Length: 167
Image 1 (cartoon, rainbow, N blue to C red):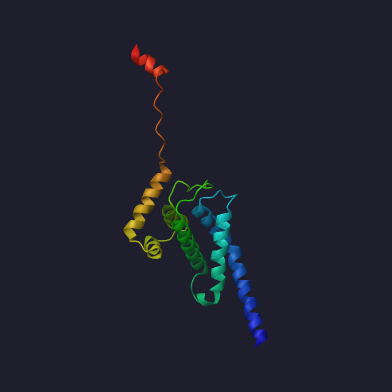
Image 2 (image 1 turned 90 degrees about the vertical axis):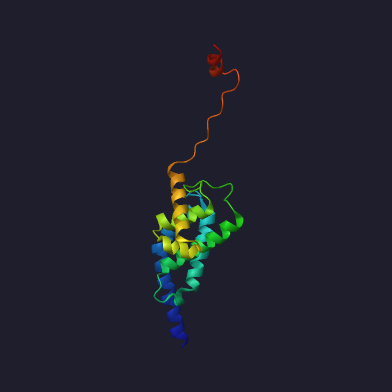
């Protein structure tokens, strides 16, 4: 019985290692987009991925027929949502592509556009109506495609424009 348990544990570890070898890069990219960190300086994303993978490994035997990538992605998203929404906007180090977005907008954009998860699935995972997911995604995409530019400062009194107006 002990030998059988050891061989099952070894097989489980090998299966999980093969899964991580194939999926960790993409999951790390998702985590990096979520945390809005720079790809070469992403400690929060690495921690987020490590916790999500540890949870996936703990559930590995119970996944029976469930896609392990989907399970790991759901865990990553849930952990990010809980942490980001409890703490609010990322402060300081937000330098990534999705930094202008709120945590909720980043989560929806990453799941919908980067991961290709359907609106209905994202809505179910986040507990929001499908229409709300669509609205969040559209608003975030518009913000990324057409960032708001700061309005130019008014010319100081006595500047060249003021002299022209006076003449």
